[in-house]
Image 1 (tube, rainbow, N blue to C red):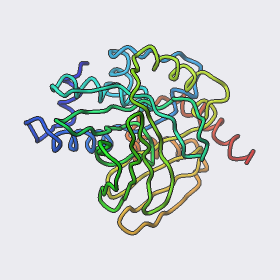
Image 2: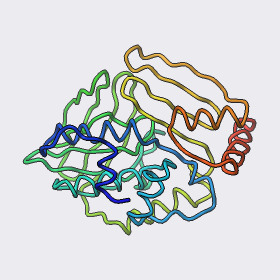
Image 3: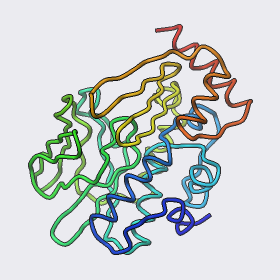
Amino acid sequence: MNIQTYLDTLNLETTSLGLKQIQELQAKHLVNYSFSSINAMKPDLLPLELDDVLDRLIAKRQGGYCFEHNKIAFEALKYLGYDVQLLLARVKLSGAQDNARTHRITLVHLGDESYVVDVGFGSKNPLAPINVTRSGFVEIGSMRYWVDRNEQEFEIKLVEPEEVILYSADFSHANENDCNVGHFFSHQHPSSGFVQNLVLSRNEGHTIHTLRNLLLKTYDVATNTSQEVTLTSVDALKQVIEAQFLVSLNNTDIQFIFDKAQANMLSQ
């Protein structure tokens, strides 16, 4: 498994470098490869070497989160010939302003314009790159974002169909060792939400599937409506994870995560 093999799975139709190709890569990655905390819920260390990440997410279809998904996107864009920059962002979905930089994103420079490419932010993941060159509104389908930009940093806020700050990032140099620190916390620290909870999402553009422990939601982007159902058995959970999220797992894993997710639901 290598970057070219990954790109082959996306079957990109746009062959020339430019925003259209980046948009296609982001959209097709989101459709084909799900955000998942399953591996983070288990005690195993998850190496961030590119070969290991490609094996977990692409070859074995185990799903993953930002330090894995966005590493693949970064390496793929660099391989294609883009000017890319690794950034670490502060997630602000909870409203807290002082969270640690635990979200990896990619900044792509196209001429005088700079775009955030993100394929690892879960259910709130933008469907296309966001231009952060200057402050202003960005429209992506029915979603509307506000970018607040100054010389040192930028912040991205979803304003329609709901208002929530996604994250902020500054332009200071970040490297793979910085990612190792955030990645270790995210999949090993007992207070990490990914260690504690089953979290999956898959974005098909018109439909967003999410699973929080045993609560499955299907959101229709066009109508801004959603349906919810609570899964009540191991078999139902396994079927949903494989059919709706395209994630493969074995019987030992499914029993483990069902028991943990069920305990979380009962404690709420």
